[in-house]
Length: 107
Image 1 (tube, rainbow, N blue to C red):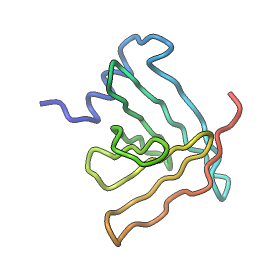
Image 2: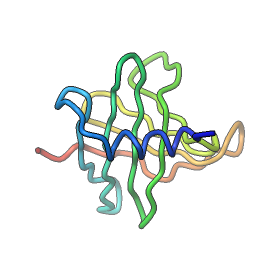
Image 3: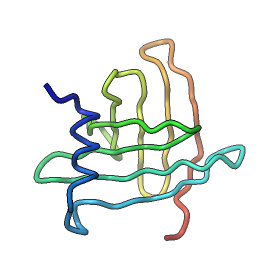
């Protein structure tokens, strides 16, 4: 059985139309760089986010504003709105902001 992350990696490896895949680099607080690749095959949306030497797969989730992506294990949230983004770790009352104030770099 494929996990969401495995599916996202398979989609990255497969040829995709330009409108289905976009990459964006963000500069976050403390100068950290975060790379995100967005995959939009059909009516589904995924993000593969690289930060601190790791690469994580996310799938779109319900959001009142912007695009909110949940990691396969549910422990991380990647949230974008316009040219800004943030990364949160944890769940419920135990959430910790990993990166705030991420701004998309000109491409």
